[in-house]
Structure formats: C-alpha cells, structure tokens
Image 1 (cartoon, one colour):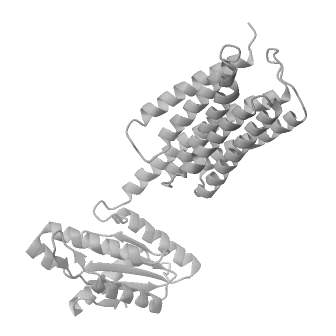
Image 2 (tube, rainbow, N blue to C red):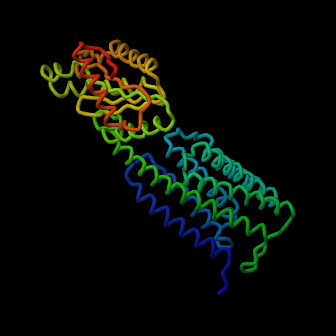
Image 3 (tube, rainbow, N blue to C red):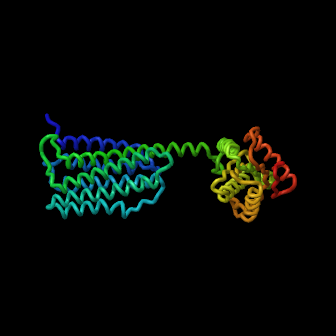
Length: 382
C-alpha cells in the first residue's frame, strides 16, 4: 500500500496528540514552567495534522481554515510558553491576534488559492520571527535549549519563505503518492519542524529551568534567602584567586548584628530570626552588583568587595552601617527593632600564601576588635 501525504499527516497528528497528553499529565500541578503551553501547542499541531489527514473525508474548510489556524495557535502557545518560562507577562493581544487573523484570511481568501497560500505563509513567517526574537532576547548564557528554539523558529521561517516563493512561481500541487512538488515538500517540512522542534525546546528548557532552580535552592540559606555558608565560602575562594591573578584589591568583610545577644536573651529565637532576615535583605539590596554577600555562620554575614581598595571599602561599609540605623527592622507585632552592625575588614591584594580561610580569619579578628570597641563600629585588619 503506497504511503500518501495524508498518511504522514495522520501519523504526525497521533504523535503530537500523544505528546500533548503526556505533557499535560506531567504538568498536572501548576508550576511556572512551559509545560501547559507546550501541551496546548502540541494539541494545536495535532488538530492541524488531523485536518490535513482528512482531506477528501471532511469538509474543505477543515484543511483550508482549521489546519492553518491550528498551526498558528501552536506557534502562539510556544511563544506563551517561552515567556512564561522566564516569568514574563504574556502579551495576550499579540498572541491571539495572529490565529484570529489566520482564520479570517483563510475564510475570505477561500476562492483565491494563491493569495490564501501566501497569506498563510505570511502569518506563520511573522509568528516565527516573533518567536525567534523572543528566544534570542531571553537566551541565557550558554543556553543550548534557547539555541534549539531559535533553530526551529529560523528553519520554520525559512521554509515558509521558500514555500511562498514556489507558490509565486505557480507550482501546482499533485495527488500522486509521495510525488510532492517542491512547494508541498517545503510546506510539509515546515509543519513538522514548527510542530515539534519548538515543543522539544520548551520541554528541555523547562527541565533545565527546574535543575537550575534546584541548584540555586541548594546554595541559598533557607532563613534569609541569601547565599549559604558553602556558597559564599566557594565564592570567596574564587574571588581570592581572581584578585591574586589580576593583582586587584579585594575586600573581605565579616558582619554581625550588635543587638543579637540581647534580643536572644529577652525576646527569643523568633525575633532573632527577624533581625537576621532584615539585615540580610538590607545588605543584599544595598551592595553593588559586583559584590557578594552570604550567611557565613549562625550570626555572621560574609561580604566580598572585589576590585575595591581600602578607602573605597571604608566608604561602602560606612554607608551600610549608616543605612542600617536609618532602617530599623519591623517585628512580628507593632514593635520596631533598631539594629546596628559591626564589621571587620581585610582589604588588599592577596599574596601566594593567602587563602580564603586566612583572610576570613583576619576579618574575624578585626570584627572582634570592633565589637570590643562598642556598637556600630568597623575595624580594619592590620
């Protein structure tokens, strides 16, 4: 039995439908990922292929109108999934207008096959271009899956351009088994690429996003949300090595809340946790983009100031201490917790004998001296 193009479309429809059901089952619990949108896109592709497979068995409008609209819905869904994956608000007007435009054009141009085919290609080209632009704009560093999305959108765009060129040349379709004209071959290839490549890219990006989220979670302190001890210690080692190689100064700062012992004795653990959370958020909001802060111990924070000489480090730390006094913590009730911090600073260019541990130890000695001198003080390691 010869294999006809409708048979290929039917097989593609079954595959897309099975994938859509699998994706929806996997995304049963609501999450901020691209699985629901991917399932919708695959369902739209399955509908388009089913309509194409029913040529001669179903009314003409199914292949001439419903199939192109299904393709357009799939591309809009993939764009929605890409935006959802990056926590971007979906421009619903732009995502819904293209499928609606596709349907209107297919209906009004039903008696003009050439104009209908060219309009079909034009709408898909615009949608591929939008998907390509968003993929490039949202691409992460070394984001292989974003490149796969860009490849799929780019191939779909190119294939629809080529199909439009063959339509303009007046190449007519054929009904012979597998005797496809070039225009039909490019249309079929475009449909397959745009149905499955973006879907695969979104599935892989969702998996990559979840893995990155788990990695970030493993490196975050559960109480304060900033880097935990292993993460900030590793960061310190990297900064020390980088400063040693480049000969640039590095500031290593240990920070503690002055009121923490009295809060623990008078008001208990919950208030201590509120003070730690407030201080961590305050530091994270006010440090520079190049700086790093993390929770180094039960009561201490480690702040790293790369490429910062001692005068600059003093200025940064003075501003942090003053801003802490101006922004007291809000307790669980109506209580206000005025807090201050003491700091120990080591600053300079690490020599070959210096390590992250030795520099932090010197900052700890300076912090002890600052605390012995009183509250809201800073001392620099000798």
